[in-house]
Length: 176
Length: 256
Image (cartoon, rainbow over all chains, first blue to last red):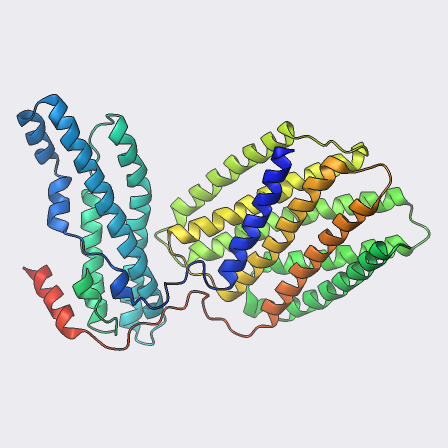
C-alpha cells in the first residue's frame, strides 16, 4: 500500500512540475533581478592556486599528516564553492546568450553560440566534478585536475566580453 | 445506465472527436510543427479511438475482440509515447552540440535505472485486485506510466541543470503527456490494487478520472497546436544599456 501511495504522490509531483514549466516559473529567471545581480564574482587566480597540484604537494611536505588532511578538506570545500559558483554564473550567461542567439547580426549570433557552448561544457564539467570532490572529502581518491574549469571559465568571460562589445548585456562584466 | 458511466461515455466520445480534430490539425501543420513521431502518435490515438468506439457498438464484435483490440492499441500507443519522449529530448539537446553525446549517455542511463526501478516496483507491489486479468493489465499500465513519468521528470531535471530552453510547443507536448501519464499512473495504481470482479461505484469514479485526464491532455495539445506563438518558454530580455566602461575594464583585465 505504501508503494501505491508513493506512486500516486509521485504522479502528482510530475504534474505539478510540468504545470510550473508551462507557467514559465520552472526555469525562468527570477523576477526583479537583472542577470548582473545573479552573477557571483569568482577570483580565478585564487581558484587556480587552490587546484594547483604543486601547492598540494608543498602543503603535504610541510604539514603533519593530520593537519594536512584538515587543510585539504577545507581546500576541497572551497573548490566545491568555486566550481558551484562558476556553474551558476554559466547558467546566467547561458540565458543571456540564448537571447543574443536570435540577433539579426550574424557576428553576435555566432558569438552567442560560442558562449552557449562554453557555458554548457562548464556546467557539464561541474556536474561531474562536484560529486567527485564531495566523495574525496571522505575518501582519498587521488588528485583530480580541475584546471579545465578555470580555463573554460576564462574562455567564457572572453566570449562575454566580445559579445558585450556588440550586444547590450548591461553590467555583466563588472559582476564577473 | 448509471450517471457516472453515462458521463464517462460522453467524455469518451468527446475525447475521440477532439483527437480526430487534433490529428487533422497536426497533419495540416506537420511541416511547421516538426515532431513527426508526435504527429504519428496523435493520428494513431485518433484512429485507435475510432476503431474502438466502432467495435463497442458493432454487434458482430464480442467483448473479447474488443479487449484484444484495446490491448494491441494500448501497447502500440505506449511504444509511441516513449518515442515522443525521446523526440522531445532530441529536440531539447539538438540545439546544444556541446551537450549531445553526454546527454544521450545520461538519457540511456536514466532509462535503464528507471526501468529497473519500475520493474522492482511491479515485483514488490504486484496486482492485488479480485479480477486477476484486469488487475495485471492495470499493473502493466502502472509500470509503463511510472516509466513515462520518470522520463518526464528526468527531462525537467536535465533541462534545469543545463538551463536549456523549451520551445512553447515542446512544453505543450510534455505537459499533455504529463497530464495523461500522471493521471493514468494514479488511477492504474489504484485499480491494480482494488479491481473487483464486477464494476462498482469506486471503479466508475476512477475510470471517469482517467478518461477526464486523457481528455485534458488532448485539450492541452490542441491549445498548443493552435497557438501561433513560437517563442521559447524561457524569455530572457537583455538589459537595455550597453556597459561599455565595464566591458573595457574587463578587456583590460584579460589583456594584462
